[in-house]
Image (cartoon, rainbow, N blue to C red; front, side, top):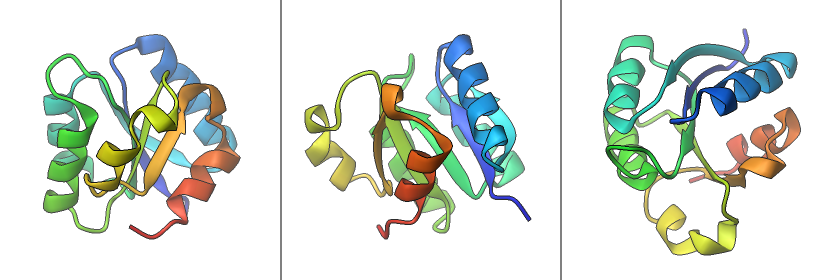
Length: 120
């Protein structure tokens, strides 16, 4: 059974690209959201195994969303992403319950899988 993923990003184009990339790698994208509040509602409704979560959203930052997702769903694996590099966010990533961080330019099925395998 494939791992289910919720893709959260405020840019439609990135959500489409991420969906295609992840589905080509064997993941099943079961939802998309364009804001933090929408992500929390979607996650509660579809219970994904993993969430690909943008750091900068229009209503909340991804770190706050990650903390809430991990509180609501302790087994969910959150992977944060941004156009900025990991060094810009290292301390914030470590404290929000996410498995890790990927620069959007580095996103692939392989890199996503690598981050998912990390322990919190």
